[in-house]
Image 1 (cartoon, rainbow, N blue to C red):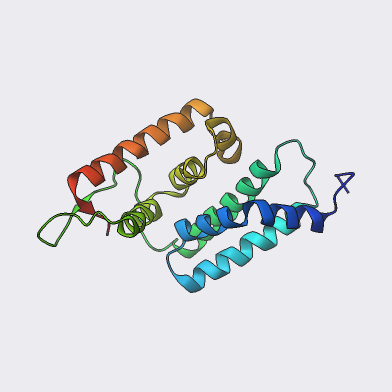
Image 2 (image 1 turned 45 degrees about the horizontal axis):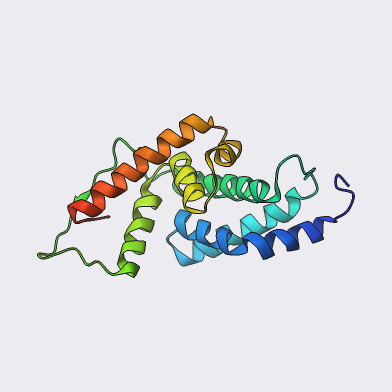
Length: 175
């Protein structure tokens, strides 16, 4: 076993205890359909448990969990949506005007739902970056998860934030 002090099961239990809610938020960001979301969550947990056979503590437990979860989620998206062409790059993300007359509803739940819908429309790599940012990971940790340089991560975060800012200031809604 690669780690001297903790078994695969112990590491998995520790990871779920510390990062389980983050993993669940990640699944909601990657999958809108409740049944496919449950499947994705199961896949992530299974792959996470399996991955601890190889865990050697060269990175933090947090980084390891996010890396495995994001990789499984990205694979899920590619597998589930291969035939759908509704994923767009940051440059192509269009903000759709609100169809209803009047002001954009400002309550927190709707804002969170809109944010989730926008994030779901991003390509997997952009989605990984913004979800990592929202979970409080720094650019270096996100870079380790995604394979991007910290500077590239920071640039993507700033671009996504600018898009989201324009979205909310413009009173739009996501499709």
